Length: 393
Image 1: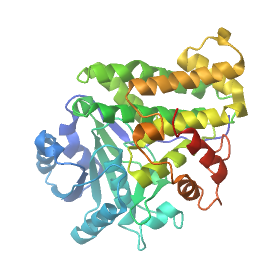
Image 2 (image 1 turned 120 degrees about the horizontal axis):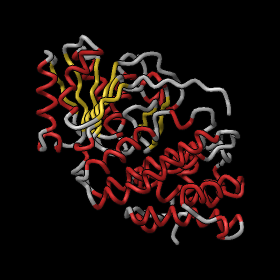
Image 3 (image 1 turned 180 degrees about the vertical axis):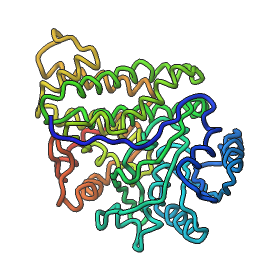
């Protein structure tokens, strides 16, 4: 186990009806008289959530300015629009209502407002944010874990680059999580969310760090809980208890606890981000294609860890066969689970062309100058090999 510091400063307000506490929660962290409300579609106005939020905020004498239109794979252009609104209106608090895309947009706006340059500088690694506006979230989609994470992922339409920043500075000050707000989400979106949270855990699980049994078992327990409840929540979308398990798992998957004392990987996310950036495919769907292929490509690096994963997470019997057979059976069972969620397993399943592998690999590695991942370092050639494993089965 390596040295680590762990701090997650996001207050979580979890449970039924908690969205009505948003005005009080904002006032606990700010004396602001005006906030920017960031959201995606008009669905929050049709289902009454917007009215509940607005009423609570007004009760504390706070005005609201709106920034709607957040899309999956959130766009830099909308971030820049939000930055301008905040500067013009002297706003210093941003509230996101939605899933990871809305929250990541709010975080980007937060660091962009006090910065003299282009906020995209942060995502290219040309500059590091030193300060931010306060941000908060009302989470309506269980997936990204952005409601308490240190990450923000944004897509630049100029070239369709999708990049991230990762800093404790940008964690929301609070997040409200009411599982009931996720009941009406389409099944496909729930499936994407389940894949996303599972891969967040596995990016931490596949490590070269030794003597990490505690966090290994925390990761395994979280994965097993998601597996049990993932299909159930699709069959019973308004079962509060089942949905609450999934929603909370999504938060814990990416709040930093599961990576304490270990080096994380993140190669698959970098590889998948280029797919969703170029083709605008849902992030979870790109991961259901890439992650099993990555596993097939690298499992020889540490067969014992992949055997452990197969046995502890997917109940593959040690008597199933030789090490290679056990490793591959664990991967096969994971693919089968993704299939039960109606997720694509190949480029062919997703209806995606297979003509841009070199372009995506080039982007992922910054022109083959920076390899991705830590479990196994992967350059442009290796990433193209993995994309080729994703073609079709």
